[in-house]
Image (tube, rainbow, N blue to C red):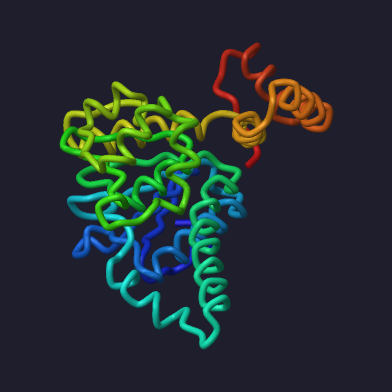
Length: 275
């Protein structure tokens, strides 16, 4: 493990061969997102972003389930947290809470390294918000997905409704958000919610680890640039994206990574890159 890996209350971090394994660690609560875990996610991603040894992040859930969504105890305690004699200030405080929760997950997108979600068991509500921020998603047979907020009488507000239509068919997002129905791993793969379905949790983690290792073997500078460009292109026009990548490569193209990749190709050997 990298020496600087933080010790967090609700998340376990391990780092090996340039791959950081970030594990949600409340298995007794199906990794429900309590107040501490929301903040720990941001701390973990900030660490992964700045830790030079990390090239790829794998996000996992301890136990039988990936994430059961927001902890209902946290939801019940919100009223006490935001109450103010002024109604407007109460609502302002609630808005600030929501914006902060959004930011904890947006930290996954801000992390310059690719983040891969390995999903087993339930991925519900806030768990969907979480994996929608990731670069890629893989699932084991038996995994289920649901935008569950409709069944507790609320509109999902931490990213699912904004990000998921950029990942899968928007009409399918509407169906899932309006109904709250469960999607199994096979359907998740067929609609593009996950990249691939594996037959077991063991096969899932082995497959994700192999994918992470492959990405970690590539030019780290180029990988960071690819993530930057893809995230930018999602939210901008083609013309804007082309202009940005031209500017990016004007600064980044002539790198030690480019030289090493070309020399390794000529020498018929694996390249060795700086972090």
